[in-house]
Length: 460
Image (tube, rainbow, N blue to C red):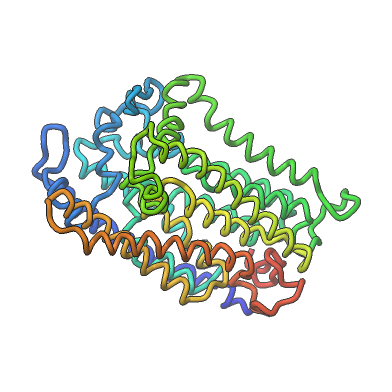
């Protein structure tokens, strides 16, 4: 049985959180190198275009000060839309509504992109710290992989990822940590958090499916069925989880859809129409495109193929993860919903037509929470570092007319290194056990994911 220290004591969690604060400060200072006086009349830092790629201090946050009416302090979506050429108008942004709200909040009181970057960082920091504390409480010192590793420096303020990572992590935390509360109640709370995550950046919504399976099969070892349930399964509980998630998504989106339907819909249209081009860092651009003669464009056969193949393959990867999770449930007695969620994320990251560098932040909590070989983690971080730095140097050399062959190799190493490791991690996650399971890989059925742990129960 695990000791309380292995569960992640309050002291460990606080230490991890404090170190995370230092890392976040470094992350802000890294991005702030591209921001500051002198400014153009539109509030753009003159140094931004000169340094953003060569010094890899580019951030979407600073870039989107212009072009989304953030500089005009327009409330998002309500008066917006999308032009036939794919340009967003009237305050509409390309993200779900809660991310749009955060962007608008960051623009309040800002008169230039440097102030917008600072305001946004101050909004995002609490989410990064909360994630560090939750991971520290659940996994102990491995949470330093989130709190003190290069990805947080590179990406904490690259885009608006910290809130969605916090929402997804909080959903797991609620189910695992508060085990004195009935499973249905915990799962409904987690479903609400995952739905909030969907309204931030989409991907956590997929995790509702394995969570439903966990509830349907009675939770840990099938021993968390309500007393009112007769039999081995809880279909009512699973439907309650689905209803909670769907109701939350509707409640958040409906006001925007009613008040400004064209602007609300435009954010989804933008993402649907986005091309898998050189800016997307995906296997589609660096691999599949070559099969179509390297021809791009919205009307090309390549674009049509990616538009169909990408969502179909993502759905297939989700189905495979759910099925393999079912097989593990039959062997061990607990449906491994956290492991299945991690595998689904791997499928999404690998097969989606866009693979932005900051998506690494989505994956790290699962690398912390599940027992994954450290060699795999190190390999992934190395490939990610090649991408996170190399892609911007590559863009700089292309724009300056320099020989970009070396940096293209670095980028391809990052693209294909991440891709290969995501395939491996897909299957490794599905066999992995949580870090709070001291029995490790040789554990029997009583140590499946979600098993009631005395230390966590006492801590709650």
